Length: 303
Picture 1 (tube, helix red, strand yellow):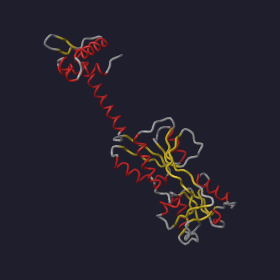
Picture 2: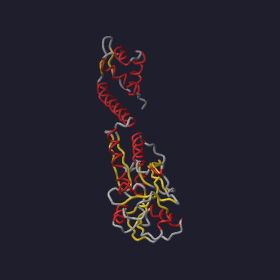
Picture 3: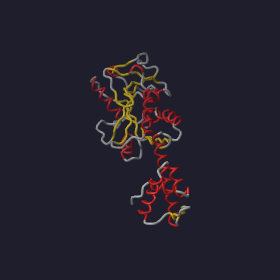
Picture 4: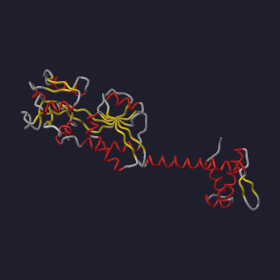
């Protein structure tokens, strides 16, 4: 079928005005062109839509039926165009973001609040899950984007770097490290160490740090959650090497964070989306807000 929008608009204008000349004036079109558009439509449909006399133009039975259906088509098209424009202008839409629990807690709440204040028509959904589930959610389309740190070989995703996250030493207020602004990895020799379990990417980086300065890694405690590690540090049971963004949770514990040097070990906190899929304007705008919030977590000494 080769019915065009122009033909439908011409037909509806004539039907509403009851006159080809009036319809042409309404559309800002030459009358011969409008008449031809209606004739072409009738030819395509195989039925007359108007009974024409020297005095008036009247809809046929087929014309009246086509008028209702075609009017709905144009109305739906107008809605579709407006919806697309609203998405482009970030007036409506939905963003679902997947993130690990700690990053979800310390970065995203304020980012979501700020973004929704700017774009109240966009609905934001947060899913706090593990790293593997984040990638899976992004790849299968369940989430528009994901926040976190991901192995460099991860395929099927594209990354936007938000911040570089240096490992830091967390210690209790009465620790011998409290008065220092920085701590070297070699200074951890003999210290009771609280680490995350071996399935954590952070734990792997801690092992790299100890291997670099040729110290044996013998954890006093191995836990799954950063918040648990901070609680053990607060209780004076040891020190912990954790990511920079743990500083936000550390505010709720009597612990302090120190930058680790020699070597400085960092990883990138990134926002990911599936490769080959375009990023909606709203998602791109939200990424900018998340980047700003994430960078606030970086101590000035690291900048």
